[in-house]
Image (cartoon, rainbow, N blue to C red):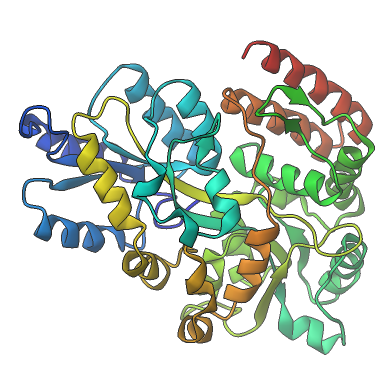
Length: 422
């Protein structure tokens, strides 16, 4: 899943890891003060904004230098490499840039340390994002980047047809089914390959219909409901009726972005980073598209709350320095650069009302609306198993191998088994 752009992908896996690990031989700070050099581990920084931010930190903290370690594109691969190190008890990573959905799992496993709330400007953040950083009523991470899904649409085509952007699923389906073929386009795509992105898209459909998957931090399974069936039927009907193309079932974030950017899609569900890339020189849709909140059955739908949180590894030898680095990365000045240099949605609320930023990033008011209405993915100490179960079941729904009714019964049974093992 494209859960962060500058902290969401990368192809430098082995080379970067080896380069990062080369500096671990001299990590000791003064005995017992929790301070000294650190590593920040993240998914790949393709916009290359994070390096200069850490250079600024390093220039002012010669005894607390930060080494950046970048992991792969796929959220699943990033999580696998992080958890492998953490399970081994390794102290190689100090600060972890983690998907918001992993906070509960990492906290329950004892891999990240609780943090002092008054050390961070939590009151300055968009309210929903803080909940993603808590587990069992304690703060285990600090929000760094937020995200909410948007519906990108071909503004030029809708204007030619005298149509407005869809606000409901019925309007989206009608336009995708009738307008897209008229202009030689596919109708609608999200991230439908069976990976974390499919969990996100399915969760958004279920929440938009008024349903849920889990409650009570994973202890109660709620997916076997009429609302959840309606959400899955939205996806299944798109496949049956052809306004979700077969190719879309192989899309992750980047494949779907490229399809839209190449002028092959009428509608795309994706993250805010697409706005900058689709308007870049060479894009076939630059200046020809807009973005609105995701539609739902009767009006605006519900996005999954995406993004990443910064956490301190419980194995870190320098947790005080790590906490200070997190405070630096969530400061107003740096959060502004997260947006302007990294094309990532910041967590500080006041930046969404800055007139200069809105002129440069006209989607900010829409994004703020989507973030404030967004809901997190299911919280569970076994989130990886929950997500895999959702992916497998929804893949069968979108392959038309199971009906939504059969799928919710099956998923309820599988999630119940996971919950009982918590």
